[in-house]
Length: 61
Image 1: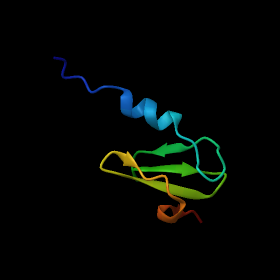
Image 2: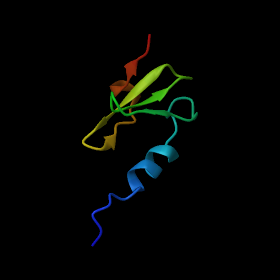
Image 3: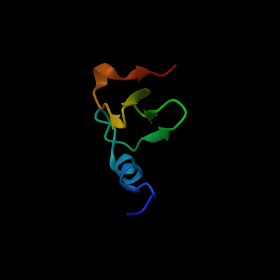
Image 4: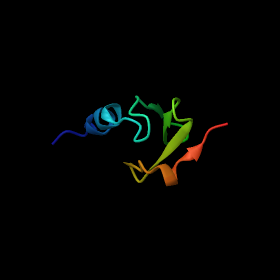
């Protein structure tokens, strides 16, 4: 068994789109968020799971 971490998580994040605008998201590794520039929202990633609910998103300034 390999000790290397699978790329599944990264591929999954790249496949997600904003639930509001259906545009691509930017992954912010430091804040553990997926950012929608079009919607001006940041969706949290908790325990490795993206929370893609508008009610849970942080509004961007």
